[in-house]
Length: 187
Image (cartoon, rainbow, N blue to C red; front, top):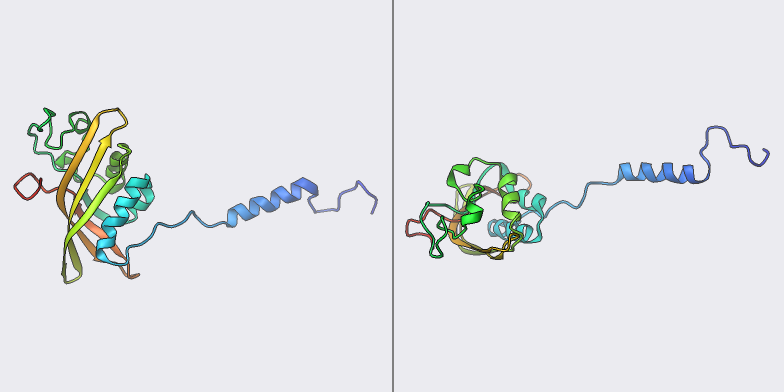
């Protein structure tokens, strides 16, 4: 065949390489899947790591699809620093982050609001109480530092996390309250 004439039905040069690259892109799998908790207490640790890393997908993956999440309860009282909420976040409570009426919000939406603070989440499991098909974790959580608006943020409390084993052997969160209402059980 004379040089310069393309072979019928076959891409040449860069076109062939580009076509092959597009086919390979289509075959690549999704990004790395988030880790799954292998025991009940690991669920709280994985959520804290994901929030601290800013990985919304990994944080939400630790919750069952119909899970409920209430981060910090707001009793409407004045905080020690003069803010309008019990958690000391006058500015941040205004956006509905900590209002208990928001408990019905999807986990992803609540987590995204928490991650907008761009601060690490610390968690310490205080106790684990296994029951038939569930485990209740009593956890102490805290977020502290300077928020993106330059205002100090200091949230901490003791709450409960209910986890359930999944069919694949992993554990996921069914319900999560990061701080119980200010009734003597929390800070």
